[in-house]
Length: 111
Image (cartoon, rainbow, N blue to C red; front, top):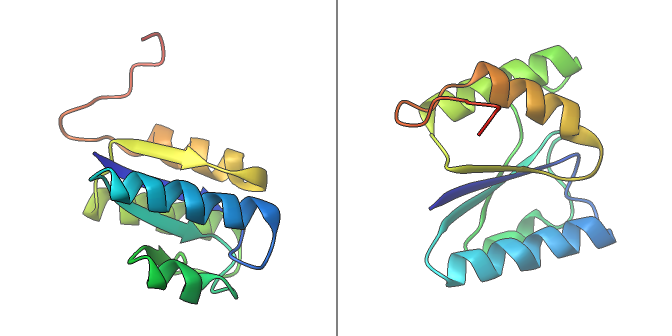
């Protein structure tokens, strides 16, 4: 399964450490896992790299709408099966999910 975790940052904090550990265990189980840091690079990027986890920021680093558009573009180029939002970026993640259509899995909110 392809999993993308979206978080506001990768600075040192409890949520970020939990995301790295969750992603590490998912990768260990054989899943393809990546982390999107909406506000750019952070101190824990190197720790994630130690576990071979890809961390990337959106291309646009200014407005929330531009970051959401960048996330949508990333999803279109790198389809995922699970899009997991953490902490304070749930709205951007939800908007990106609604705008993004996985070719084999259309968004059906009632299922």
